[in-house]
Amino acid sequence: MGWHSIVPAPPLDALIETIWDWDMPPAALGRERILPVPGTALIINLHEDETRVWHDDGRCERASGSVIGGPYRHSWIIDTAEQIRVMGLGFRPGGAHALVGIDIDELGRRDVDLDALFGASARRLRQRLLETPEPLHRLALLEGWLHGLRAEPAPDPVIAHAVAALSRAPQLARIGALQRDSGWSAHRFGTRFRQQVGMTPKQFARLLRFRAVVAQVHSLTELHWSAIAADGGYCDQAHLTHEFRAFAGLTPAAFMAMRGPYPNHLPLD
Image (tube, rainbow, N blue to C red; front, side, top):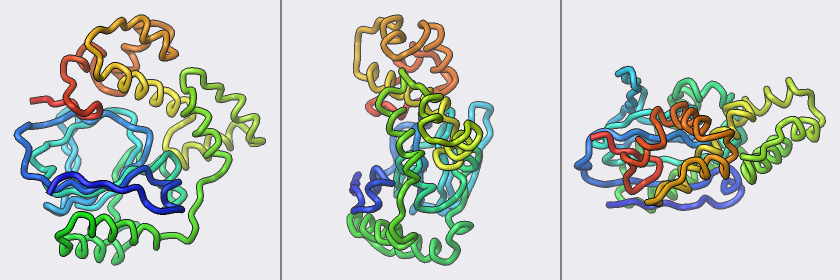
């Protein structure tokens, strides 16, 4: 039992950050707010054949136990009591498109069942995972299945270059220059970026700036928000607050008051 993770072997390591396995008793906490990240995720619930997420308006979205979705542009809520035996992986931006070949912009609006994408292969995978008691063996099984999806998958070099440039310095993003360097029209560059990364280049840079501030302040005790806003590439503190509300659904001060041991998870009760 516990948390285990691996980095997959090439060529998947260029597309996937980590494959993980969580097998723990029900948590004492209740619900948690999950902050958005710039990559797509694959989730396989081995405790029950359903995944559920809640929104601020009270809606509960239900899907099968094996789904792929994201990246999301706002936070959502999970019930930690349901997170008992779950596997998953986090794709690098553009990685899911390279491996699965689907329009990632659609995944930001709704999760897609693995069965709908891979049919009997996905159903056999989940059954084999259910029958495998050792977490490291489950991780190896999932990695092997992923290696079999597509021969020598690779990200689009133009989009990969743009993602890398924006990731290095999102607060200094020069999207027009990246588009011109690509040799593509602005329309083609924007369309291909959305299809492969799941959002526009501007939205991607905004999310990266937000993520950089979250990483910076999560463990701090003394904060000077105006300085943090300036260092993060924001016009002023009000601009930073606006972005926190857009991505996290709360203010920077509320984030600091609610933070727990993990920067992406905010305990609600």
